[in-house]
Image (cartoon, rainbow, N blue to C red):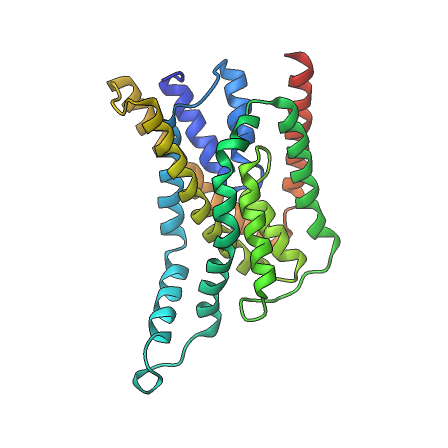
Length: 278
């Protein structure tokens, strides 16, 4: 492991937090590695951090996931055997997720190529600036209250593209998919839950890349120090994810993402300064 136990703890906390907040986890990982003097994160640490994010999101979205599963199960029953009517809003949520997967999966497949840009502070500055612009745009348009019953398949695909765009360092999965939804008139609170579920699918795809990287290394055995770093990183990532969900729901549901856009601009500026200095 290149990172110490304390660095792994800090990395996990910031990775989990910024995985949910619309300011790019990859951007903060690159900046932290720059300050730590490291070159990369061990695939095992990346894997457990991603797993912690997925598990935490699963618990956070469990109510919505349960409603979707129930409605899908009811829809598969013959009409004469149904004891209750289908909640179309929850049922159509599953259709939106399924449609968005068609764009998320190809994006995840490109992660092996786009991850090469992660160490470039110049690319990080450019893409973080793009992320800031995307987050700022919804604040220029009036809000609306569309839910899954009014979202078209084309809009679902665009949300999926927004989620998958996070394979580029500096771009936020949750932030871009949320912005795409808001620009198409989707309700803010509803879009938060939808973005989190899409991000969960995206993160599962990244976990598969982590496993492939571990297999490529040819050694899955970790010593005691490495296991400690992984454990601390995973716990910190779970805590950061839970905190990020709470902050996102409280801030984005009321004020939108304008404040995060200025933060992302600050990340772009810092990245560019570091690029000039280092």
